[in-house]
Amino acid sequence: MARHLRIASAQLGPLHLADSRKSATGRLVALLRDAHMMGAKFVVFPELAFTTFFPRWWMPDQDEVDAKFFERAMPSPETQPLFDEAKKLGIGFYIGYAELTPQGEHFNTAILVAPEGTVVGKYRKIHLPGHADHKPDAAFQHLEKKYFQVGELGFRVWRFLDTITGMLICNDRRWPEAFRVLALQGAEVVALGFNTPTENLHYPEPPALRVHHHLIMAQSMAFQNATWLVETAKCGAEDGFRMFGHSVIVAPTGEIAVKSQSEEDEVICFNCDIDLAANLKRTMFNFAAHRRPEHYRLIVERVGAEITPENR
Ligand code: CDT
Image (cartoon, rainbow, N blue to C red; front, top):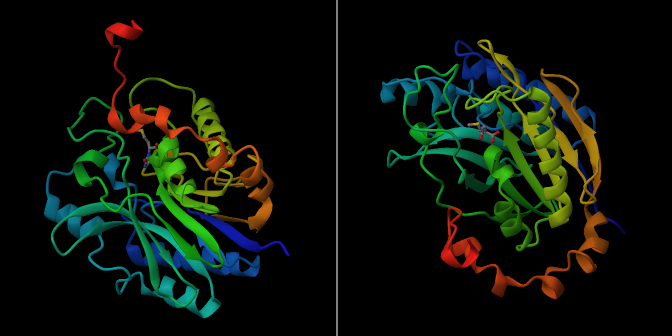
């Protein structure tokens, strides 16, 4: 009999600089209850879900940044109600937050929490976009390279709710290598939270094109790796800076099963047939039969594109 898992993507509308973790947690709990009413057993929340997307702000005082935006423990007294409610409802979840370790390291982190309330998996974001320097002439900043270190835990999967589930965070979705490493470990579900500005920081770009890229990436990554993919936005105008929604659950066929409609708090849910990928994994994307890693060496040996004399 096919395995099914009812998965929800719980999208958050804007969180402003003035919003507290307590109020964010209250909204996350409300979304969790909505997801429960839809029958969800696994809920995917956004990246950096307890605060505004603070890397858009240049803040020179690191102590202030740490106090306002980073979590020294997860759960903490402010975030505990989400864990309590999930345990009460018997729901597992993915959530992103800014992590400050006891050694003083800063990571953009996501965790996988079992329905019993225990943290079973942790991922620290590897592809950090943006810049580390102040760009005073830009409309906004994207300072992930200033506020976070590159994650050191690799791309991993976990046995979770009778599936093999992997985690990624936001910009990772633009890098096929990240998905393929999860797929090579048998990933059946990939959970990912994101915060994506509607405007391009670097050059003018139609917002519709940015959404188009988001959707085609999600569909192709799910199909080419034969996984379910759940991508959840934090979106809307945070202190006037807009981020798009378009949270999606994509099937291993590459079809969008369900997509959010708003840029506000919204839950979408789908009863995912985890075995839907079996035919693909047996034929077209049977990695063992068809992959040719001996010809992929440049992927791990070379970082940037290089034009060498022989291919000029
Ligand atoms: N949060 C995050 O990773 N956002 C990036 C925006 C990059 S623009 C400098 C994204 O890939 O959506």
